Image 1 (tube, rainbow, N blue to C red):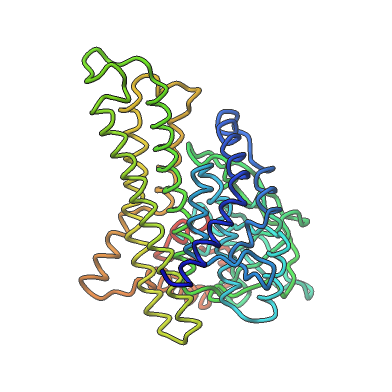
Image 2 (image 1 turned 90 degrees about the vertical axis):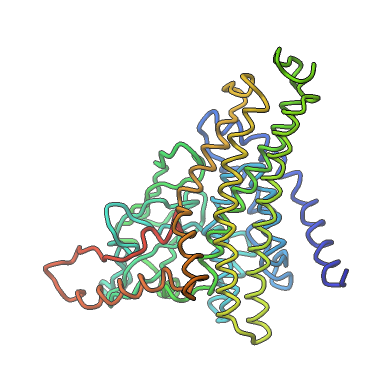
Length: 431
């Protein structure tokens, strides 16, 4: 073991030990939130106060100093406690990566805010339009930048201090404007009605004449090259956490069973070879999901290493994208299979409402639906067979949309025209 590897293990172990009591508390309350349809505001605030949002920030800047792989190991721990939590933090996590990849004074200022506990939410996607960019506009009125529009799938924003809003500027260029979550004209509505991931706050954001500071507007391209992979890996960490939680609850449930089926293979379910087989398969799914997430995270660390060393960043980013897309397929299957098999190990006692074991499948199915895996299967095949660029699957659509918008921006008769693109909802980025 190298000195770097030993230091990594120690750093992650110390961080895990520090957050373990908080994660345990989150796990204890997650089931109540699920049953009562309440929201974990206190838990998000506690995570922020404990520095969770700054774990990727360098120690010298007030953060935890974790690399990507270390952070995602911890994110799976959090997901096993409550799968809603990683998704709540999803926009925040991606924003931190963007600012760390920057280097400007403005980036450093935001990093300092993150280190001080600021939480970032997002509002990117819109409904009723084929365009990823939508119809939200950032315009200069009487010398001030003003934001108007409506967004959906605004994950995490009800818990956030600032919200990043995807909009079109006067010149038709897509931008991300950051506004205080409680600013005048910002309305955050917790109206997400999905059957899973209910506590993520993925509802509507309405923006009416919201004033935006010039310094809080970033161009859409001003992002970490592997930002999209980060967005997807967060969802995969949530799925891996679900699989682990299913494993743990399957074990606890079997151990608590005293009665076996008359045609079972043993007097106690724990001694029944077929029940053991089911639990073993669930454990294998959970383990494979975590390994796949870890592999994707290490690939993203490779991108950071290339940035520092002056290596081929684009090539490393392509490798990271493929690793994450491959994980998207396997992790989704693992979580969904585990969440179904658990009932084979527990019998009728597993379907009691009090146990709420159905939440695992509902949450896994909801997470998987944010970014349909069938498209990633095709992308990977296209990369392997035709040398397609995995980094270009959204960029091309964005470029087309920008060109179309620029060409029609002066057409006063069509101020509300939507922008056709090939990418819907940034592949679930806003969700």
